[in-house]
Amino acid sequence: MKPIQATILQGKENEVFGTKIVELPYFSTTFHFHEECQLIYVVESEGKRMIGDSVENFGPDELILVGSNVPHVWHNNPLYFRDGTEGAKSVSLFIHPCKLLQLLGTFGNMQRLSHILGVSKSGLKFYGDTKKHLKDLLFKINEQEETFERLTILAQILKILAHTKEFDLLTKAGYTNTYQLKDNDRIDKILKYIFDHFSQQIKLEDVADIVHMSRHAFCRFFKNRTQRTFMEFVTEVRISHACKLIAEGEKQITCLAYECGFNSLSNFNKLFKEVKGQTPSDYRKTLIPH
View: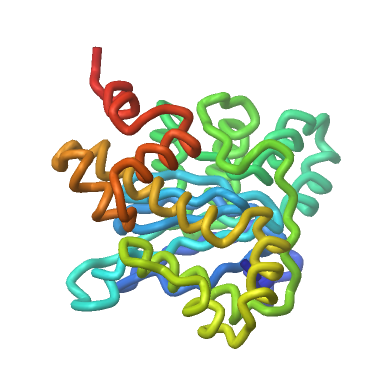
């Protein structure tokens, strides 16, 4: 999966941070990365999210910190592209970590802040009071135009980030960005095809044809970029969607297995346990309040 390098604070090379509100029929970014850390709150939208080697569902009321130069994309469900009745909205704060730490370092020890910005290279998903407070501050800093007030709010955000432990790591242990700047269009086409067709039969040859590669070259290319085979990646996307359906609790496991693209219940159960470490039935039990 080959991301493009994006310039976020373009024309503002001397600025340490910037803010952005996105409100569109659907999220339109490609798989990309940038020097700035991005704190992003999804107000409205759902689909598949990829950060580094992590592939999960996303939905409203999600708060994520993406580290510097970590590839990422939020891709909406096909419904968003068909009828235009859905909507996508997010609120973001972009922070240039090196410039920020260099600036704040003149005032004292920034070890805690430096640590969390480093940890954010794994992708952080916040919860609890941390999510609530950061979400409120994100809206405030985006709405505020007065520079001093924005700096005051930024200081509050940084203080919370430096001290919180209310987050989950998204990428696997030891993850490093192996993507290069070339082949962005190719990898983005692969991602979008998988996210839009995972519930159907996906043939490796068909995807290889989309990016004009032979089967062998495609397999080598994909594994070099993602550290897993093509079908392992497709399976992760399908299992991720199955977890979402199980959590919603509206479908029998037998039905949702086929809805997620598996051709047999036994195959679904086997692969689910390989990915999640437990059976679908056991996973459902963990979601039941005690």
